[in-house]
Image (cartoon, rainbow, N blue to C red; front, side, top):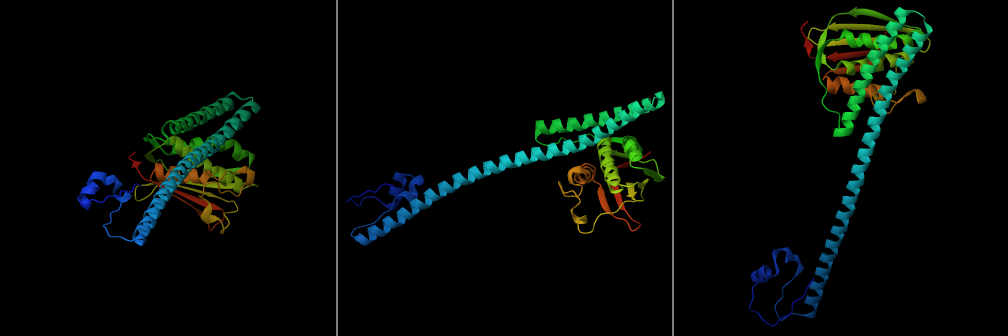
Length: 299
């Protein structure tokens, strides 16, 4: 701050303001003679307080900028970590079943079974390659790019997921029962639907440690949407946690789970395919999953 003391009274307040500049409007004051020592002291106090407020504002703005920078860095790190966990979860599922089918092919010295297992492995590898491509897109663009939608028979990803799960179903003594299995075409991402179905089948398998049945339905509903209904004969979901099953990282499986399966499944169905996912306990026992997908194509 600067203080001008002059005996002249030849300038108006506006001319002084123009002379000193609008940017310095709060850095000077004006008083006419005669004045007292108290007036000068009070003005000095006010200006000092104003100066302190300016310094405090600058300090707070600096701290806020630093906090925003740290928040952005933390959010970016958390996002990358979440995507990495998601990728690891999905890729791990595929890798487990690729290895399972490879083991089964080696155990059976049967050319037909080996050919079938290798075909399944190639399908899984194709899905894994697509998953890796999505992960790379995130790394390049900071978010997953729009997925290419195509028209396909919904039976295809179901059959592929069942082929991948076949080894695990046998190992866990689980029987798959198709109650209704219509031909339904949709517009969507086939590889993403394989991920969805595998996550649901894996959850059902974990819920039936002593074996059991998985009931599967596929049909076109009256409102021209595709419906997939999957029901297991497992233990069901405890009521006290059923509201949390879609939360990322929430799991009751300990080291066996990541808590990402249903969160990823919900995102694929509801965001990528604009459908609905309902997971609830079934009155007959076990868990029932209902998937509804629009964009049904004419056969």
